[in-house]
Image 1 (cartoon, one colour):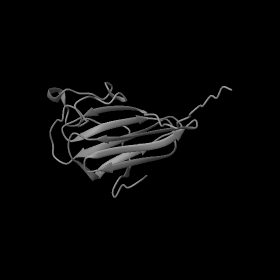
Image 2 (image 1 turned 30 degrees about the horizontal axis):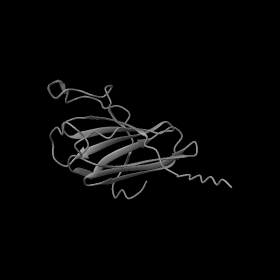
Image 3 (image 1 turned 180 degrees about the horizontal axis):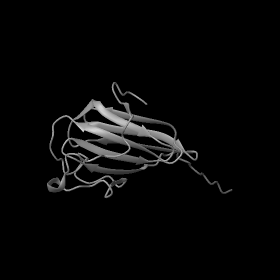
Image 4 (image 1 turned 135 degrees about the horizontal axis):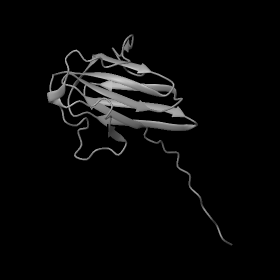
Length: 141
């Protein structure tokens, strides 16, 4: 008699997360098309996301490389993605968004929003963030 045992693990996947930074903010795009009930969590030094798309659960928790102003941060959720404008607690470039030594494999630089420190335009329109709801109190969204 031969017995076969199959184990199925329900595991979540990471969405694609793109980021860029300015002296005072992080610009983060979480790509998760048609996400059902996306939940974005911001804490003083942590960013989290969970949502389901096409029956697959996507999530991540990321320890940030510095502290942020949760109340001063904003978000915009569209059918394709979630865009975050995360205000830094103190101005200055972090040079990386994550705290760990190695970059999480789901993070990528958003070259369409990237600007070198010496090329920053103070009057720059960061686009698409007008009328965004605030993230004050956060918890889950």
